[in-house]
Each structure stands twice: as structure tokens, then as C-alpha cells.
Figure (cartoon, rainbow, N blue to C red):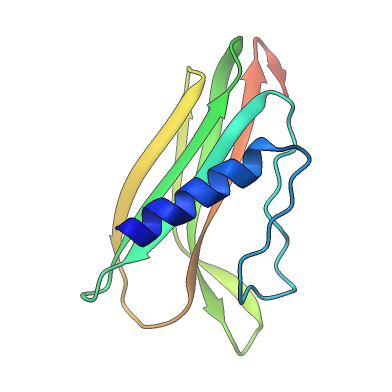
Length: 131
């Protein structure tokens, strides 16, 4: 749990400085970096921990500036496929909130060993405009 908190804190701190690019240690160089592409987003985070029993705990969050009317978030749990050198969807959650804050805590039972990641994509709206 401490490792998850440290990872989330580091990601949040890194994303507060714009423009942002971050690279995790041991990250596949073909994987795009983490980036925030909206001046209306003040922070975002995504986290993953996997228990010894194979239960994945996924967390994600987006914080937007005042005036935000809606956040559409897509959180994907993905598994790395060595043979195709690509990330494949394991589970996907889509949610919309009429707020300046999106937060999610999900869980999923994994069926196999491997390398997993969480990918968060969010669209942030100010009034009727997507920012």
C-alpha cells in the first residue's frame, strides 16, 4: 500500500507541472509518455497494485479547475503481450461526472501472470466546450 501511495504521489507531483512527460523505470520505450494536454486540468493520477492472489486494485483521478462542467473518464487495465509487443485491454471502465473532480477505485480478478498497467484518458468540459 505504501508503494502505491508513493507512486500516486510522484505521478501527481509530476503532472502538476505542464507540459509534462514522465517515464517509469523499465518502461517500454515504445509506450507513449504520460502527458496532460489541457490547461483546465490541475492534476491527474492512476495507480495499480496487484495482490498475491491476483486481485488488481485500480485507482484513477482527475482534478480540474473551477468552471469545469463535466469530466468523461476512461480507465483501462491493460496487459503487455510480448509476442505482439503491444498492450491489450483486460478491463475498461467508462464514467462521466458533472464535477471538477473524478475519482475511481476499481478491482478486477486477473486470470494470468504478466505485466499490467493502468491507462487513464479524460475529456474535460467547461460549459459546452471540450477543453
